[in-house]
Image 1: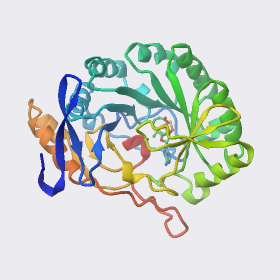
Image 2: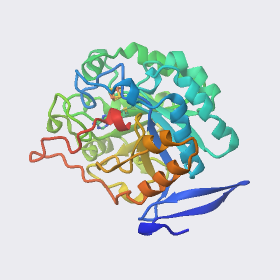
Image 3: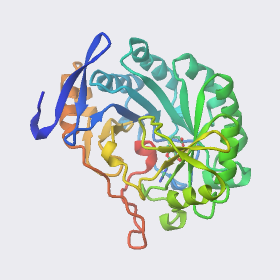
Image 4: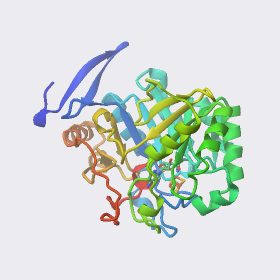
Length: 350
Ligand code: SAM
Ligand code: SF4
């Protein structure tokens, strides 16, 4: 059915259910929702947050029931992959209530995947419960295996806890992908050993470029290491074989012949991944961002709270998707010292 502004929703057959799919003005099907369930975190990673952050007042934050309703509205509109993120999703109180209630969409078949991105600090506590609720794969962010460097990068984190969390997650049967942010002069010499470590444990590794989101205490120029440089250096040591492996996310993967493991690259700055973007993000206040790299947003909390029926919410979602832009315009160079966007990654989630 055609809507205003060239956007359309189409009904497609998914097994027994006729579900609608959100299609944006550039004919991209929107099937992947990332939900930041809290802006708070038990770490203060130098590229993500300033040391002294002001967090949102509790009243602005959607309750777990409201988050469930919001996510479920997107599932009804054809979202098939849902990622919980943050802030640190596992520090939100009673988060397992949300995970457990959302898992009904896995049971019904409407959702193909429920997953999360975590810093790993709480995994020891939650790994088994995550697995029991139908979560099969998770992303764990880890930028170094050196305990001192880890403390310097995360300011408040404890590497031992994260490693124990990864052990627990693997013991529970969760597949793990490690996400590493490439940081100039910090972990650039360590990417090869992280890769060897991850692959030896049967985990994929994805290397991510620093994105200019929010004011942090350091200059982005000092942090920024192009992933193309990381890749070229790894290619001197390893045989990187092209693959067509896709996860529905923005990473491009190669197989490392020597380790047999997969290596992903996320290059928002050096390579434009927008043309196949199927993603949208909501914050813990119910603000929908149609693009991680643009300011335009849509308030979904008001329609959510205005009525018990979901009609207003559906209308707001349809309207927002008509505004999904073609792409982002991140730049980090000497002429762009200010953040490209004022909000931190912890608002919109990674
Ligand atoms: N706390 C969880 C974690 O660290 O995995 C989930 C939220 S965190 C914002 C999600 C991902 O975003 C992490 O992998 C983190 O390394 C990454 N990230 C945060 N700030 C970033 C930035 N400015 N540029 C690139 N990646 C960033
Ligand atoms: Fe917290 Fe994740 Fe941001 Fe680090 S990257 S401060 S763990 S939200």
